[in-house]
Every structure is written in structure tokens, then in C-alpha cells.
Image (cartoon, rainbow, N blue to C red; front, side, top):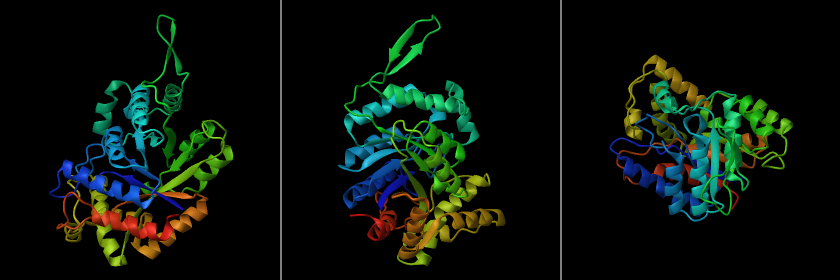
Length: 345
């Protein structure tokens, strides 16, 4: 199968954002050489453990350090951005890196309510009636004919994104619900089921997407799914390396103070209260954690069940305290173990 990567740009204890970016660069360069298909960057805000606040900027950084792999957003959270701005950013990226840019779009705000309120002062909205129109605007702005804009004066003007790239980025719709699947199908767009969130089952969304698909940007349904995975040489090591991000999520969901990501040894030493422990146990059920053979087998089973030939891995793998701050060998090890067992070479 094809394998891809979803990265949140983890920032761990003692690590500066600059060091975290260099660590991500090392993972991307490795993935490029190893034959992975895509490297996508998420959008999250107000989280000390995550530096992926601006996907277009990160895409430029990663594309500049790689040669072949497609680089994209996983995704741009459209309620936070004006469609014209998104179209122009990705037209520019496509001009710089032709036929290598993916524009993944999501509907969630990707942040807490306070940040959402600040971002939405621009007038952007997550209203379900506005979201489909915003996607259509982005599609139109990226096409040669552009869109027609009606002003209050009654006059109409043509508008398209600049610069004039020789090609267009691939536009993907991200989601974890029937709504997103139905919208992607109605607009003829490729669809990514965000299974890495956990707690949702792709069965119905995938069925809706395929059964209701109408040709548009794509002639036929085109889809893959994401998973959160931690693979290591032993199941015990994988459990230990998965604990850090689980603790961060438990703290966020229980309104505890957020910190930079814990290292493997720091996470092992944490004592969780009963509510945090419950959250961690829930994530342990939804994530794919274990020795390499077990994790690879579960990913292959998911791909077979939902008929996809590509899986995007979010490696939630913590590093050791002694690890060089500009590297991420544990994350690479998770990806390497899975590539050895799953990747079409």
C-alpha cells in the first residue's frame, strides 16, 4: 500500500520551536527518501506541545527540504481563513513546487473557543451553509476562468488567484462524519476520513461517499484514511512512547494547564487522576499501538475493510529525554517499522 504522514510538529520538553522544526525536517527528508506518498501538516492553535499553527508556511519549509514527496495541509481549517487567501497561498506554493502540493481542507476550527473567537473576528464562520460555498470559491479561484464577484454597486468582476501557476494543487476534503463525506461526494472531491481523531467509525461515511459520489474535480471516488499509530520493537516500548501524547490530550480534555510534550521517561513518571486515566484508556482503544507486526497487521486490516490503498499515519511517538533536540529518531523508527511491512516499494 501507499503510506503517508500527518505531522502536528510536536514540541517537547526543553525544545525550542526552531529545534522542533529542524526535527520535523529530518523526518520529512527521511520519508521522502523512503518512498512515502505525502507529508501533511495539521492546523492547531494555542497548544504549547504543537507548532503546526500555519500549514502553508510549514508546507513551504518542508517542500524546500524534499525532492519528490507531495506536501500539503491536513488540513487548513477553513472557518479560520478567507477563501481568497487560501487560494492565493496554495497557488503560490504550487508555482514554487509544481505537482507536489495538496490542499486538504477541514471544517473544524482547530482550536479552543477563545482562539476561535479571536480568529473569527475577521468574519469567517463555520456555518454549514457557508462552508460548501467557500470550498467552491477556492476551487473556482484556482481554475483558469476564476469566479465572478458581484459588488454592492451591481457590477460584476472576474477574479482568480495569483500567481498564475502552471498547475493546480490537489484539493482534498477532510472529515470524520457523514456530513463531510456527503459534501465531498456532492462536489466530486477526493475525501480523507480523519480516523486519527478516534471515537468514530468510518463505515457509514465511506459508504456515503462512494454511493453518492458525482463526478466533478474527480471522475471517480478517491479516498484514503488517517490513523494514529505508535510502533516499536516491543509492545512495552510502544505503550511507553504513546503515553506522552495521551497525557497531553487528557489534560486538554479535562481543562488542565497545557505544557510542552513530555518525553518518554517524563510521561512514564506521571501520576494520572481517575478522570485523566479514563481519557487515556479511551485513546488507547482508538489508537494503534504495539510491536511492529501487530500495528502493521491492524493497519492492513483497516485498509482492507474500507477498500483504501493509502493510509496516512500520525506517529504519536515520544522521544527520550537524552535524544538530540533537532532530531526525532523514535518517530522515524515507528514509520520505518511500518514501511518495512506495508509500503509498496
